Each structure stands twice: as C-alpha cells, then as structure tokens.
Image 1 (cartoon, one colour):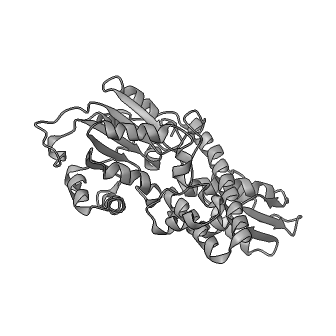
Image 2 (cartoon, helix red, strand yellow):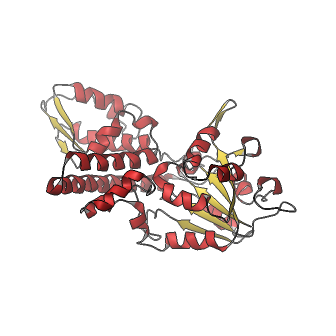
Image 3 (cartoon, rainbow, N blue to C red):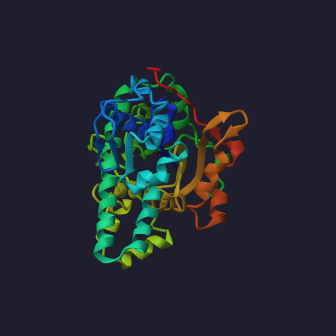
Length: 365
C-alpha cells in the first residue's frame, strides 16, 4: 500500500514562514504606505491613496521599520478616516476581504473570488459583464504576482527546520493495520511508496521528500506550481466544479469566467495527470499536513478521497494547546468532499488514533 502525503500552508507556518494571508496583506500595505509616507500618491490595481496634505505625515513612527508589520492595519484605518488622505479600494476582492483578513485562509480568498464572479453575472449582462470579469481577473493576477514576490522573500529567509526528525518519522511511519477498515491488513508495514502532493508554491517540504527517498521510494508533485515555474506556474483561483452555481457558467458566452478556474490551469502542465496516475495505480493511505481541505480544492480532493484505492485518511492536526486543536474543524471540511457519508466514516481515522502535526520551527528564528 502507498501513502499520499498532502502538504498545505499550515506546513510552512509550522516551519516559521510567514505565509498566512494576513502576513502577506500586511506586507503589501507596508509597501503601499512607504510611498504615502513620502507624501506621494499611490495607485495600483488594488488600491488608490491620494495625499491631500503633502507637508504633513502623521504616521511616520509605525513605518520606520517596514518589516515590523504589527501596526500596519491600525495605520491604514487612520489613513482611511483622515481628511488628509483619500483612500479607495479599486479591487472589490480586496475590499471584501480586508476587514476580516486576519481570520481568513487562502481558500477563503479563492471562494470570495468565485462569489464576486457570481455577483457579476447578476449585476451585468453582455459587454458590461465581460468587462467586469476581465477587470476582476486582472486584479487577481496582480495580487498573485505580489504574492509570488512576497513568498520568494519568505523562502529565501527560511534557514531550515530546527527539528526535522519529528516530521520525517511521521512521513515514514508504518501504515498501521488498525488504521485501515476497508481492506484487511495482517500487520502494520512501511508504505511501498510515498507521494508528496504539495499545494504550496514554496519548496519547504522537498528536503524532507528527498530524505524520505533514501528509505522509501518517493516522488513529489507541485500540483499548484511553484515560485520558480520549474514545475508549473503558480495556480491561484477556484476549484469546486461540484458547486451547482459553477455549472451555470457553462451557459454563459464569456470565457473570462473560466480564466482562474483551477481545472483549466491544471491542463497547462502534467501535474494533475501524474497525480491521477498515482491514485489509479494502487491502494493508498492519505496523510494531511497543514491543508485546510476547503471547498476551493473540492474537485481534486473529492477525486482523491472517494477513489476506490483510497483506504484511509489520517489528519495531522494543529494543536494550539492541551485543550484546543483543529481536528474537528478539519473533519467538517473533509466531509464536504464526500458524496457518500458512509464512505467518509469508514475512511477517516478517529481523533484518538490521530496525531498532532509536529512544529519543526525555523533555524533562523
């Protein structure tokens, strides 16, 4: 039996990389405010800030060290309320998520993008709708480019894990006979092969995969592309073709609606084909490390989880404290990828047999 290892953003966070959406947006606004702090107007595809009083800057101190992003949202709120500035969201996507960005996951941003696409269909028809969607896609592309620049800096700052052994032990652990109920295993045994399915654009996991390969045949897949484009350009968009509202797009004469739908971007590389070949080849167990399992990846996760060769799903949950973890929330999310709930209960390993994901940290921290 093989093992499919799903890697999500929580894996990078466990290694000390600041890759949350709020970290990225805070960094973006610091860049914006560096120009405004000099008395300059600022405009890009997301926001516009006009400086009405160029001889006065009241927010200098919080921006003396732009790398310290802890106060940037307070600064932005003061700018929005001050008569000395005119602040305008150009992007409806950024405007919609701004007020709650500290609580949002990347999957939430992709879902909000889809919701705005839906809104455009209700508000406008014909040429006007085409223009709205094209503008939204351009803004999302701009946001993605800013994200790539930010993640490149984060990846360069990563010095390696302080504790690699704990994660390696999880990756290479036995498939235990009591974790599988859909087929009978006589005893626990090592996986025949490991397959790392990386949803991040970063390469944090790869050193582990290469180390695992010395013990167990291992391969990996940057399913959403990566920063260097070697394994495909980064894919950022919506991936739930099971949503009934998505099916309505197919009746529209507007190809712009599909520009950031993940399934069409998957066709640009061989990554999805290679994943399909792996899951079709043999029985496998799924391990989940730091992936939210949100709806924006439902098309792919449904294909994996409900596949006849998928025999069990094990969550390595985030343990915030002795009394707080995200195991139950993860099960809610995973359940949405199953049409057959009986199959869900057979495959999903219970909390008492699950483990918290180790937090290896960053050697530079």
